[in-house]
Amino acid sequence: MSARLAGVRVAVTGASGFCGSVVARAAAAAGAQVVAVGRRPGPVGRHVPWDAGRQVPDLGGVDVVLHLAAAVGDPAPGAQAAYHAVNVAGTDRLLRAVAGRPLVWVSSASVYRPGGGAAPIREDHPTDGQRTAYGRTKAAGERLALAAGAVVLRPRAVYGAGDPHLLPRLLGAVRAGRLPLPGPDVRMSMTAVENLADAVLAAVHWPAGAYNVADATPYSRDAVVTGVLAALGRPARLVRVPVRVALGAATLATVAGRLGVPGTGRVTRYAVEQLAYETVLDLGRAYEQGWSPRRALPDFLAELPTNPAAGLPRHQ
Image (cartoon, rainbow, N blue to C red; front, side, top):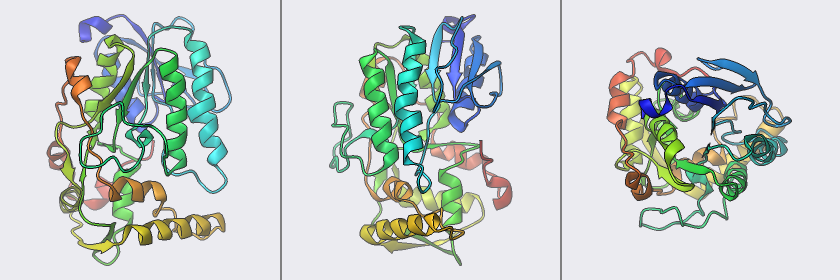
């Protein structure tokens, strides 16, 4: 893979973010000439400023585009239009600038219709009926990318050093040694950020279409939660909360946030969705291209410090 990227001019959108920064470093390590396209400079390469919600990016001189810029999570009160501006209209503006060059567009398993059943989810699973603004806008954006001939990757619950979403929300939900979780234990696919980065670079040479990307085996949600908390020295007793109650609490928290009540941002519909429903991805299509995940959650847990404060990721 490294030899096939040596000297290639690679644009990485969102290179200052969690996933984008890992991809940018991996591309540079593979010999690529990195162009970090986004509001802020990336960790490596030349910076080209771009506001994904407003502008067409300057991709002059670029050979390949890796698109990771996105509005992620739950929109703040009144900010749903911004998610459309970045994830949908921003994709349209990006595609105009790409103009037929190879494009890897990083999507999300949040595009899949909820309630997939017990069987692993394949790429032909319907991509409608999403419960969150994030899922809806990512699905709309990837439809544009697929129609333009892009390679689309669908990771789920990306984690790793510097993660600004999963780990901070988990730690923030612990109260007096108790952690509420929605519904019973479920199996879920998760994606180490290093596995995603490997897939993004490899996918430059894959046929157009959608591909699931995740760790090799799914995890028990409860085992993940207890393992992370134990590694950070913050063990907690898990408290089961009915999913409907958890969703109702998330709705109330959203209303409270709209009214300016502090400390209500941790409980969101997006967070509940990630934890409440079994979601296991079928990785067969990516395996057929020769990709395989090299990292797993135990690798990450072994690297977490025992000091909880030091274990908190930095926001990108």
